[in-house]
Length: 543
Image (cartoon, rainbow, N blue to C red; front, side):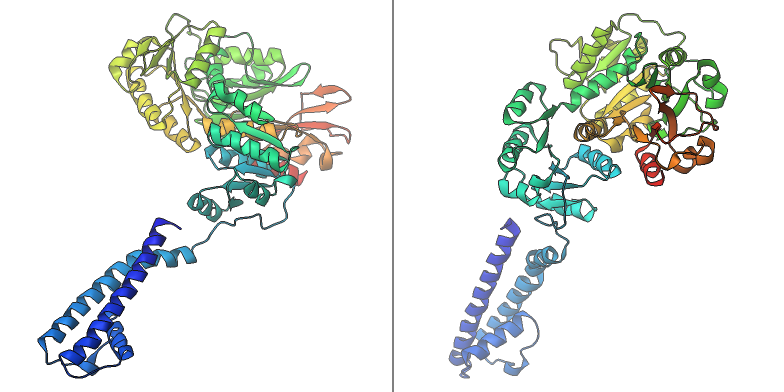
């Protein structure tokens, strides 16, 4: 029973006692002072009428001072007890009875689903991914208010304890394809142990916050242990190392000589300020631009009139040589690599992973952190101009913000942009909803921990699906020809109808990448499709 419920019960018991006390006093007073005895039931009715202000004229007026004082006191008590205290204590009971409540068990037929134990920001991305693949799910949320809020928002959620056998049985874990433990490290290991007790064979995926605790998740029986912050750090570091490495970085092999890669356009590149049509990318490099991120928003296919800037990230397909040519055009023509050029702000798990990535690529860097510890070059506040100057912001070409608080990242971005208008700012966002604000503050490239980790979870769970997830909301899938067989790409109008791009056709062991509108799809072909989650969903429904 909640605290306010206990208070309400005590209040009602106390109110009943006060009414009975006044009834006894009134019964005695009418005999002793008015010489007009009453039955106790009549006295009780009079007290109730007085407390509720519904009237007591049948006994008025009174001749004795004692009875007049008693009725005055009774009126004040009634108004205070009922009209002031009752709404505060009793109304929540009515609200509780009337509001929508999350169920405590799965109320519909559900199998081969995913059981998500507790709902975090990355859970929203995970749910979006699962829904795009028509995979069912149920969220097991132990907090009642949180469960009710999620239920009202339309999520499939039950209010139950994920650390209990009963709670997981109510989520039908025995019929599920996987379980995701997404709470604290200690709770996650408890959830995995409980899941093993319910069903030894269900696949369990556990999220670890502290990497050095991963082995305990393994010991608990988790089939996969994910460290989202480390993956985020590697992704952020790749935005710098891709520009100086001889490899492409985040690329996906489709055929022996065909890749799909995301390439950020750096400040100082000759592509900045041109439109996609004016850039001559297709003519000069031969690549196919599948999509692009413009200030964090993915567009597929991008408009030929879309302007490229330092925050644009291109998603391109082509041979390794073609992509290398495009990469050389995305880099700054004046980019030099001197000591202190890259500044890492924040040296937690993400910052340390970034430093490892830069060190492996031979990129010099300076670390700024609030705490003076091993690996930190300058101890200071990321939002203080003097501390940032001491870390070399004025001469830096790139700053990577790896702070855990989004508000600090937003403010630091404003300060850094003021100190060095030409610096390239790569930022980490804890939650997806803050990405847009960071771009507004002046960041050139932002990665959300919630998005990256949510898609990591989806990729791990949907391991039997031929799906490749990038850092943002885009998918590349292989699919059979389906209803496209026998038609040309021009007649099918895939781009205009779905927003997806057919980037390659696998035919008889070879990969066709030079796809014009006259290419006819055959029944035995496999297609490689790229697009947003919604676009891929539309493609699957149509074709």
